Image (cartoon, rainbow, N blue to C red; front, side):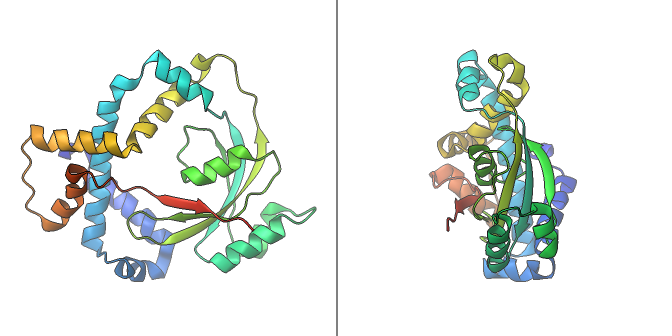
Length: 239
């Protein structure tokens, strides 16, 4: 299992996080009791968990599960998203973007925010789950409330606003979305704490893993004791 996560994988994830918070990254880590080493360990552990769960979830790719996933599946949806770590800026942008006749891209530009345009669906992981949910549940051309997402490792908050540009019709045959539905099913298992705990505990027992690194051991303990795997916690704020 260890060989499935490379140093490059960890470095890439670490770089993404450090670039998101810029010069404040070291302070953010310190504020939540993390060091560069412990955060890298956290990233590696999460990726090891993802690999093991992905392998174990393959047995759940049944027709019944595909049909169940299809029932809750949202097909391709065009969105525009902005994000910031400044709550005041997020509230200001949200208010201005909801004004009659407002241009979402221009509002973002006026507030020094970059717009990310994507085509997403229920299998997408381009944005946090709550951001996608906000996009899917609103009508075309609507702008969401501010969506607050907390990083599971550092606890730092990022504030998102999403505009749903357009929505596509859903095909009546689930098989047209089989590739996406496969991702939905597996992602669902990854977010299932009981399933994840069970998989990790079995792997540790099967290979008689003896963890000598204290930081790594502390992180893995949660999967054996059943306290739950790390995951992003998020909530939407309404005005």
